[in-house]
Length: 344
Image (cartoon, rainbow, N blue to C red):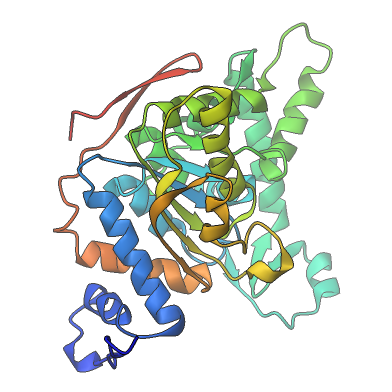
C-alpha cells in the first residue's frame, strides 16, 4: 500500500494548466480526481478506435460564464455529440439575440428585482423582458420549420442555423455538423417559445411536432455505429440519464453487441448517498451495464465553473496530444445516420 507517495504541488514549475493538472494527479482529494478527469479525457481523445465522445450539459453553465468554453470544445472537435438541458441551450440563444448575464449578489432584495423584471440565478441577473423577446423569437422562427414531426436534434440544428453567431454553442454545432439533443426540451424557455408556436398554429391540419421518442431512436443509431463511446458529464440530470439509458436501449432493445461507455468522467457537486442520479457514481452505472466493466473513469466533486475551465485549459495547453484527431461526419436520412470516420 505504501508504494506511491503524494507529491506536493510546486507552482514554481507550472508552465500552464496542463502542467498544473498533471501535478494534480499526484495529489489528493478533488485535485487528484480532477487530474484523473484530464487523463481519462485524453485517453478517449487518443484511443486508436476513435470513440464517439458525448458531452452532457446540466446546470447554470451559461450564467457561470462557460459559454465560450463549451463552444470551443465543439469547435476544436473534443466532443462529437452534445446532450443538454433545454435551459443551457436557451441561455445560449438568449445571448445570441443580445441578452446578457449581469453580475449580482445572492443577498439581493428579490422582491425589488421582481419589480425591475430582473431574474436572479444565485449571484447573476438576467433581463426578463429580453427573455420574453427570446421566447417570442423562437416561436416566430419555428414557423419556418417544416410542419411535421422532428427530433430535438433536427430542431436544434435548425435553431443553430437560424440564429448564427460565432460565439454560440448551437450555431457552432450546426456549422461543425455536431448533433445536439435535448431530451427534455420543453422543460425550458425554449418550451415556452414552442408553446407560443403551438398556440398560433392550434387546430391546423399540419404543424411542427416535437417527437421525443425519435430522439431515442436517433441516439441508438449513433451508439450502434460507434465502436466505442466516451462520456463527459457536467452536472447530471436528464442528459446523464438519457445518454446512459441509450446503452440499455441499444443493447437489449436493438441488438447492439457491445460494452457500455468505455471512458467516463463527471464533474458534479451532488453526492451519491441521497440516491439521486446526478451524484450516483460511475461505478454504480456499471451495475446497469451503462459503463463498461473495464472502463477508464473519473469523477470529481467540483463545481463546473471551476472545474471545466481548468480541464479545457489543460486540454488546450496539451493540444499536441489530440491535434489532428479525426472529426466525425454525420449524414442523416430521416432518423437514420451514417457516420464517416475517415476524414480529419
